[in-house]
Image 1 (cartoon, rainbow, N blue to C red):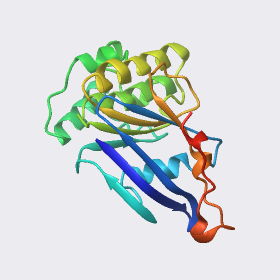
Image 2: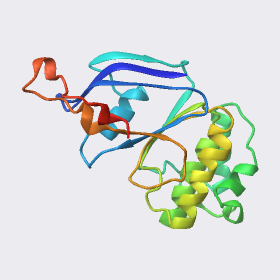
Image 3: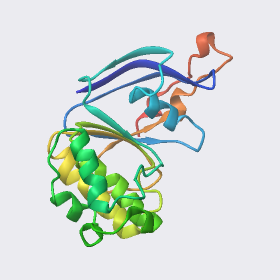
Length: 208
């Protein structure tokens, strides 16, 4: 389970969000909505432990989460398979061949990552999520550089592989991934400097 209670976070020392609360059970996904600059990336980075929260609590099993941002995180001098094998070895896990099929990179497995197109690199970067075996995924605009077919394929992987196996996902995206997911408009949690301690003017419209 992932439980977030009254979380507050800042960007560059400036309060961005406050009072963020939600609970996700195994198999559930939450899609974060809001305009650019609203704080989606900041929230995901705090949830993933990449920067400290200003206040609030998070409850999840330690070491069971992964964060994926706009960067593909691939090693150009390695082949597609070698990139995935690197991550599998790092986490002490076998490399599941199914992940090459799930992300449509089986035909590219012996090609150097440095010679891939932007979309192919993105699929390879996302395929890492199918290798490392983390139950909670924090995903920041995961479909950047993907065409419509690849977006649908990724959504299917999240739904049929990750969530179906009891995983949890928190995803910042403007794209419809075809998931049965809760949606949260984070503008309802935007910090207001004019209020005590930057408290947000929240409403029931936070969850869409």
